[in-house]
Image (cartoon, rainbow, N blue to C red; front, side, top):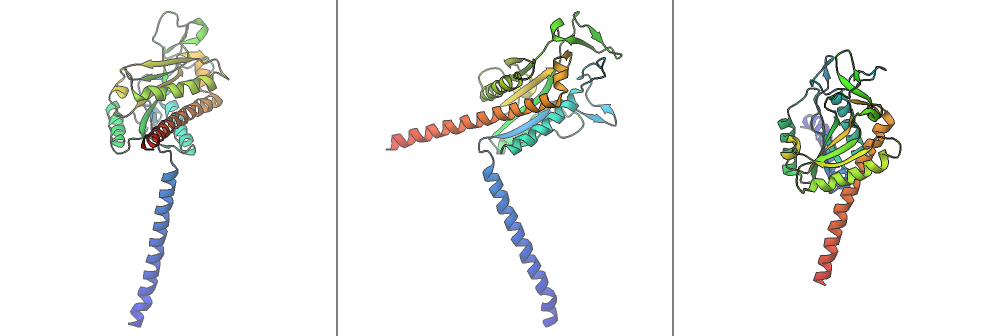
Length: 273
């Protein structure tokens, strides 16, 4: 019996220690969750795919190769922005995740399904789609690369330029989100670059129309215009400011929700008294 206890006792002690550690970890997780923003969970979607074995996963969706060698693959740029946006949001105390972490370009419906599933159990969720824009070809295009991809060397000669935000048509909660992000981008980005903010727009894009939660689609510059757009898109400082503008706008939006709730609570107290 003593020999049995000699072997069993250490096992029991080890089990108690493990259980204690798990309990501590659970409590720590609860503390972290309590510190998260009570109003927001941001579902970030990077537009298009990346590269697999040096093969770009989305046909088109790229700039021409400019004469200085600069080239932007939209899917690769978007994924880099998405990953860094999630990091910045988490540092700001906002729950965030990338909806499409794969290298391949998953379908729009698959993206929507993932978003709607999360929204079904977490109503704080909003969706932010990150993209770059492109101008349809016309005769004013003054540049063609070796693959015959067209572009404009400057906005001054007709190249479309700027950043814009889309929400679905009609009045929705997403309109407020877009307004706060738009104001932040306009104030911060325009301070150091000549990439203008083109404003808030509405469109029946598939991903905006069929997401259950509020959703906004951001178009950061035109890949078909070298100056200023591609120069800004490819610049690390401008990318940093762009992302920080989004975070600031979302924080302001969250604060507005808290202020509204506080006003409702105060009004209820007044009525009860």
